[in-house]
Image 1 (cartoon, rainbow, N blue to C red):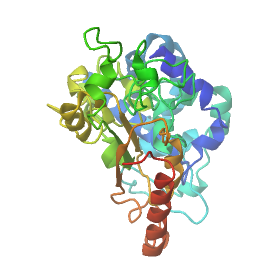
Image 2 (cartoon, rainbow, N blue to C red):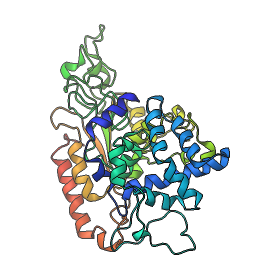
Image 3 (tube, rainbow, N blue to C red):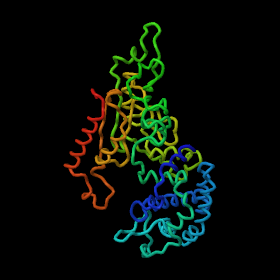
Image 4 (cartoon, helix red, strand yellow):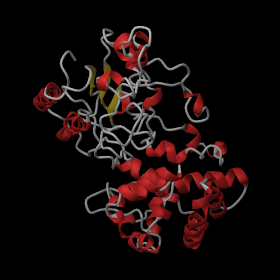
Length: 399
């Protein structure tokens, strides 16, 4: 978990203020502020304490190394929060007072809770402190596990669907998180790009397992390599899924938004979940490879039955040969970029079954004028053809 935090902190270093301003009326920083404060006010009711005390309690749920910084932030904001809530201001307005929410010209006010009976000109409401000052005083605010990672997940900052930890740049990783082995087969040697899931065996895998399927060595009785004997005529092939949140198996644990269930145990794996973009491809229908019993409090899928597991059941030589190039909110335009992260060499790797599934984001979008920003039928047709041509020029024969 510590490694995941350091990797995110190191590789995702665009301007913090720019990241936080993405979206309307404060964007992600505004949404994050409102959600965290609303959860804290509910915690206050459950434990019969002040909202500030509940925020401090929330800090204790974070990993130990991050609790002090979280508590410093709460102490910094406590006078503002306490004063505003004392005057029966909603958590929306508290976030406006802090300066993380504001009203852009020509936009209506964004709010999660009902507006007060008295008319308040939110656009003219002067923040007690500015969001810029807050970020300057606490530049690490969005680098805290659970805060930073929530910001990052909501802004979809993963522009390239490749593992963060990949020493040999073969697009496979021995680590799970950050587009690692829960998205692609686990790399069995992260220092040699020739060793990766899905490749044809190197020198028959006489000495080492070059395709990471667990089969290598020589059968002393026949003199054949185990790869040749067990997999040579088996027509082994991998699976590559290209799509959106459906294939990524998007899921936000309800316990995180149920204050009565919040505890240190519930948030123990928070950084792991958010670093995987709230997706669970390892238990999904496309490339799922294990049951969800490793986090029973967060996801409740029972026995996983996926396309990858069906292929592996039919042919054990397909072990670890999967790639999931799905992303939340992806459109047919996005897949043109995501295909570039595909790891498959025409003359070195095995064939693969490719599933291209864009479910609804070309039609549904977050824009105010939805119809204006829909993908047109002509654009969709062209995007699909371009994607198929890219696959045609990338994949091995017999795919």
